[in-house]
Image (cartoon, rainbow, N blue to C red; front, top):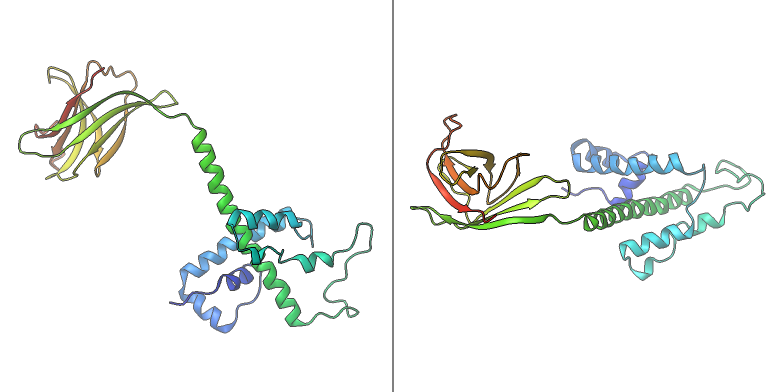
Length: 254
């Protein structure tokens, strides 16, 4: 399916009536309708925060151009001509497009709105880029978890998997058990346990879906009393007890 061009989507978000073929396409294309809705949110945000009839200063386009690493040929602000028509400070109100003393052709109006649409599309993309960059900086500033203990997990008889278990102390004070395994195969489902050295007591931390799991360790649980990490193969029988069929196991060196 041939989707609508970005310029057309932006123009529709700005309020332009769709052509017949555009209307027909939108009736059956959820993707294009969603993109128009996303552009519309940008339009509403801009209109709610900008004075009526205002045009962003050149520095805004310069920032968008730099953030998106656009081609030098696109360095010129697409609203430069429109900005040059704004009245100087203290001047009278700007003539509207309906003023008969300054007639505006439909083609000119279309070009003006299309240049605004291009600016809007670039601004929306720049906002996404800037947001992602900001989130990356914030994440980089977060302290890394402290590794309390780790151990390789060895396969039990009839299994050949390999794995690791690491206990992380998170910045919020919580502890997390990070499990990796070379395989996710099981007859039923995989469950992760912490077991006492004499194998008489155990605590389930939850299921392992895939080859990696991150499971919170209950507050107050003494790891020295439950240092053995065990991954078992559990049948779908509703029984919460350990099946007795272990795939991987290792003892944390605390």
